[in-house]
Amino acid sequence: LIGLFVWNLQKRAVRQIPCKFMHCFGVANKRWITFQHLNFLKRMYVTQSSKDLSQQAKLKPDPVAHPVLEKKHLGQEKTVTCELRSVSPLHPPLSETSHRKDLATAVGAESKEKQWKEMKLQLDDLPGILARLSKIKLTALVVSTASAGFAMAPVPFDLTCFLLTSIGTGLASCAANSINQFFEVPFDSNMNRTKNRPLVRGQISPLLAVSFAATCAVPGIALLTLGVNPLTGALGAFNIFLYTCCYTPMKRMSIANTWVGAVVGAIPPIMGWTAATGSLDAGALLLGGILYSWQFPHFNALSWGLREDYSRGGYCMMSVTHPAMCRRVALRHCLALIGLSTVAPLLDVTTWNFPLVSLPINLYISYLGFRFYRDADRSSSRKLFFCSLWHLPMLLLLMLTCKKSLLESEDKSNHLRNHSHTVEMGLP
Image (spheres, rainbow, N blue to C red):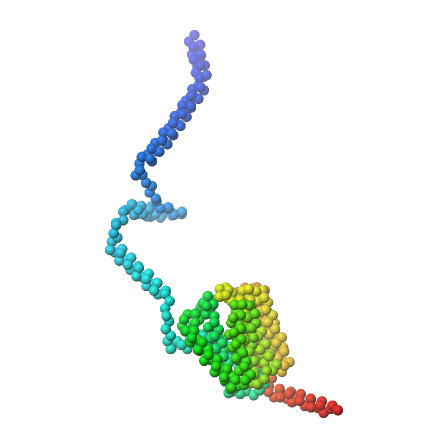
């Protein structure tokens, strides 16, 4: 009986275990939810009742901190926290006020230094300023090309006429360059290449610049007209007008300014030829054609590296508006130099040695022109520009060494006259 009673109790206990387990889980679950609610209500009560509660901001640590520097960063955080908690005094100490006064005076002095100041003209600086106003390097190139034209003329060399031609051409070039800078002051100030010119920086007044241009133009044209011949003086006056009144305003209107500027550069060797001979012959036009074609690879390569400057200054250049045409025209005129060198002996200006000895340098500049046309980068443009700087004097020097002698030209002219005379005698 006792065994049956124990077995019956065990059976009932096994049956009631799942029910008791579920009951305990439900009670625990209810107690857990009740605890969370009580905790939430407690936090809400604390945040509403404690008005003095505030949050303290801490500096954000570095994203990557070395373990060795960890203590140092903690020390910095503590010092910053202490500085935030400390209350600043109402009146700063005397040292801080004096330091602020020193800073204010230093800032005022810097602002005064940055302000525009009137630049006083000194007589010692005047020659250098006038040289930059007249673009002395460009003027030297103009005089050298005029001298080459004078030396290439098939007439005896006259030293007095040569000096008068060189001085008059130089004065005319100085006048044209000075007037050009006078007109382009507001545009040159926007370009890095021209922002340090005398008129832009205020080193010289516009009235003085115009007076200097007039002082150069009038004696220069008078020397060329009265001392040389009227044809050379007329060419000099026309070149000043073409450069100042046509080329200068066209730089902001059309890309045709490059062709007009090439004509301006081609006139000085023609002036040298006419000063020596007094007439405009085929040899003068040949020299002018060589200078005309040489200027396109020279200037187009230069303007390619200054495209940003020209666009900032408001100039209408081929390199800015028509980059493909800029490279194509440069290559075309590089090849034209070969043809013009071949024409020189046909016009009795040089011997047949000149096309042969000038062929290597003409082929080299044509190769660089092709590289510039193909690559269209700053490196190729710089190589072409620097090649043009030595190509022109080398070509003119070779032309001068291969010049036909005066006796040969006289013999040929006498032979032609005798031949024409015999033809006339043979006619009935």
